Length: 466
View 1 (cartoon, rainbow, N blue to C red):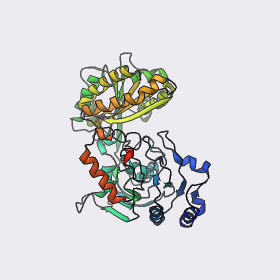
View 2: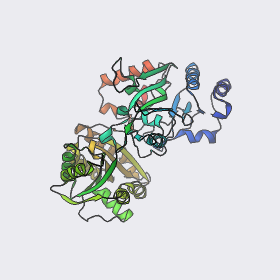
View 3: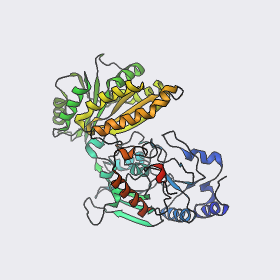
View 4: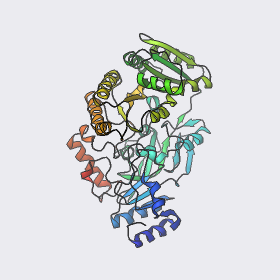
C-alpha cells in the first residue's frame, strides 16, 4: 500500500476513479521501470484520461509536495520514466485519441498516449507521415517521443520532433494550463516554449495535446547497401553523400566489429575484409528516383568501396536491412549487460571517434560495438560487459566517462535522441557550463516552483528539490 495519506489516495480516486489508481505493490511494480532496466516502484500509479484530470492531479500533488513522474509506454533507455524518489507515476497511455487530421494544412492533433504507429497509420490514409521514426515506433507514444525529442533514421532528411511539432497543450508543475505554438508553419510571437518543452523529459510540463506537422509521403523509395574496407573510407563517402543535392531519407552506419558480430549471429554473407557498412535510403518522385539514386550511388563510390548493392524490390530492401535488424539480438547474446549511448560528433570526425573508442575498449577491456545514424553523426556506442565479472563491473562507468570525454574533445554532444534521464545526469556538466546550467535550473523553477515534476532527472542528483 502507498505510504501517502489515505485522504490523498481517496482524493485521487475521486478525480480519476478508483479503478485508475494503483496502490498494491504488485500493480505499482510495473510502473517503476523503463528500458534502461533501472527500477524503483512508485508509491502510487494513476491513469489519466483527460486534460482536466491532469490539472487537478498536479494541483493535488503540489499541495502535498509529492513527486509526479509522467509516463508513456516506458520505452526510453535513459531512466527518464523511473520514479527514483517514489511518489506518483502519472500514466498517459490511456489518453490515446487522435483528435483531428487537417490534410489541407498538413497537421494532426493528438493526445500524448497515442502510439507513433497509430499516428503513421492514420496519417497514411491521407498520404502523409510524421517524420520521427524511433526503433520502438510500433509501441512508443507520441508524448514520450516529444519528451525526449526522439528521432530515428529519417531525421537525417526530415528532422527530429522539434522540427515536426507546431503546438502543445500542457500543464506546468504548478498546475497551470498553457498553450504554446501555432497551427501555421511560421510564427515568431513570443518565446518558443513549444520547442523548449520538447526534449525537457517531463521536467517542465506535462504534455496533454500535441499538434504534429505532417509531411507528404514520397512516391517511391530505393535502398542501397555499401561496404567499405575501413571506417575512414566509409566516412568520406558519407561526407560526399551529404554534400550533394539528393539528401538520403536514411543513412545508417555499422562498424567492422558489428559486421563480424552480425555475420556470426545471422550468417549474413559479407566480404571478409568488410570494415564498415552504410545502409542508404533514397526517396522522392517516381520520375526522379533513378536520378537521385544515381547521384547517391556516385557519391557512395570511390576509394575503399568493396561492394555496392541496390535493392529493386521490397523483398530485396528488407534483405539489405537484415544485418541492421540482427544487431540487437546479437548484442544481447554477446554480453548480459550493456550501456547504450547515443553520442553525436561532426560527420567528418567519425573516424576519430571510432579509433578512439577502439583504444578505450582495449584500455578498459570492455567490448564496444558501434552503429547508428551516420548522416548526422549520431552513433550508438554499445559498451558490453558482465556485472558478474568484477573487473568489467568496476571498469564500466570509468570506460563510459572516457567515451564522453572523447566525444566532447571531438566537438560532439553526449546525447542525440535518448536524452539525459538518470543515465547521463552525472555527466552533463562535462558539456554544459555552470552559467548555462544554472539558467536551466532557474527555467525549471519557473515552470515547476516546488520541483515536483520528474525530480532527480537531467540535473545532478544533489540539485533535487523534491
